[in-house]
Length: 148
Image (cartoon, rainbow, N blue to C red; front, side, top):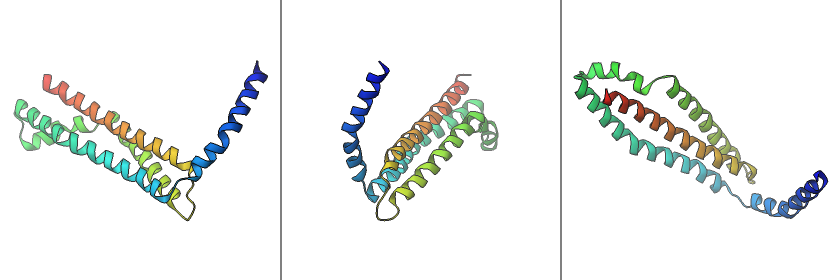
């Protein structure tokens, strides 16, 4: 059975190998730049969508609790800064460094390393997912405070 699996895997690799090589050879500097641009655009979109809503929730909490502006800054800090949010930020920073580094490495020179492109796309998707999760977490926290 093991030998049959090995033969099948070898045949698949032989059949798919040239296609994979062709697909990897057909990327350009613009492909790498597009991945980085897409990540930046997605992150901007998340911020544009969520920041005003979150600020509105903070204003609701301020009114509900009767806080001054100074009290809001002090009392609402745990809603935007805690260990879990720090983890999201750390993960985002790691992914952003990977995206930026991969985008520059892939776009550098005359022949980009197309093998990096899929990893770059995956990092971009993970970064956007991480930021979505962070926003969800922060909205959950503020909703809990508004219910009190």
